Image (cartoon, rainbow, N blue to C red; front, side, top):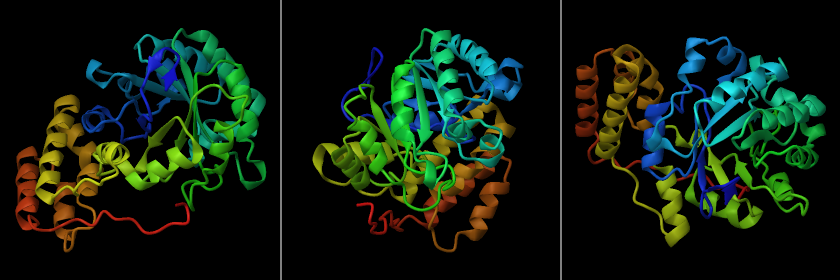
Length: 338
């Protein structure tokens, strides 16, 4: 699969851009476990052109992360074009436009998936962004605004016509948010539309190696993007690749192995963001690594309230000791999706 001249190989796996999740310390882990391409947290175009500290900080990318994309969102064409020029200076491999975020405060302002209610503006914004940079432009979006307006097949053709180099589709409407099952049927229709020549990347409910294989085989997508399933499980990329190559599943990570990974993640977060911010922003990950452990409420509370790196390290060692023989159940419920 190629995005412009960027060759990502066969059946590549993408890490989805996620606010407060896909920061540099988390991206290190996902790259280590085999993510073929990653994205920054999505960046507010208005904040970027105003030189807002939090937005500018998200432009930080490192050579070991490449290839990497910077994702932008906004509801005004001029600010999105200007933000594209700023992001281009950071030299990512791709500029990605967020037409998929369903969060109310973003979508109701006409940004993210809110743009699906104004397709002409969506297409014109994309055209101007493509013309504003020499870097390949891609788009991430959804099936439509709601059940009565699933217009992704038509939108895909229009976005391709104005020059995007790849399209990622999440298999839900904006109205669904993240509820219910992702519907990949229309993703498959876009991929199998003879008018489409750009790569199509599917996204939504890829929570196991089996689902990834089914998506590739059933819908013919060029790549798969994984988002929420990476919470506390960045090794899912390795699991999927191993299954695609061998048909066999890897053994589940033991709790001591997860502890070592969590400590590495903690140290990288502190190294990149400083002690206070690094610890605070890692809390959601620390608890995700140990989801499902019995009698863990008291320890979870300690992990999310401690502000001392040494104390956190000792607490994690205690988790490894107390649950050394516990075998996590990472199986999934049966689903009509399969």
